[in-house]
Image (cartoon, rainbow, N blue to C red; front, side, top):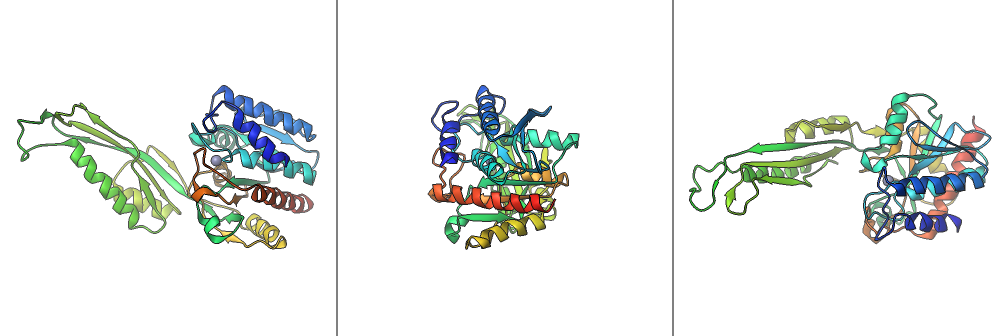
Length: 338
Ligand SMILES: [Zn+2]
């Protein structure tokens, strides 16, 4: 299948191991150029907006957009982002309607879709994004595809703990002011805070200790905080429970009910089960939904235990083909309803 060959071609850009097309790199540009080439082959009129996003319009119904992103994390997987782009090109060509969009910099905070929505001009009537699930839910349910009702909101920031440096050998345990011990207690509190809220998760992924000597009591410790929850109320509650000031915050996004029903109808028409699963990761569809564009997401089953952001990321050829079928079917119905 052509879509699979194209996934291979994109995967080869930037060199291995894994997919290496970080935002702003020559590899991201090369991937955009290759997608533009495929779009022209499909008869689409290619343009780039002021944010660097790529758009390929068909002659009819170009206010319905399908797409995703082509940047990756370092040593990322073959399917994340790329699947949504190659499937969109196939679906738009097959339906003879709609437009394909490739957003810049999804992995660094969805900068391309965010800038587009901030400008607020020339937004689509509807947006559909196919994406690899990046988790085990669909595989566990025995479902090739899933419909996403909502995209998790997140708050990111840091906590800094100040203590007092001292000699590791000569300072008694009583009376120490150890910044790293305080940070370690906070890490456990953060875990417990997320556990206490249904659907919430929180992660400390970075820690920096000063002065950083093995025989010196830490005087300062900084930890990163990544907190996520399915709705604004629970995200607020989590941020309060952790007690940090988010430097970056993204509201949870609810995806469009009519578009979700449309995707579900396409699944049912093919005898596939309809599994709804919220997204624990941020996506461009969430940015467009927050900007008022009716948006929906189709998740494609992840194999290998749902691993993602890794060269081990895997979806089957059959599931990718089904995703193209469902997108094309949904697009035909949307174009007919315009
Ligand atoms: Zn992605």
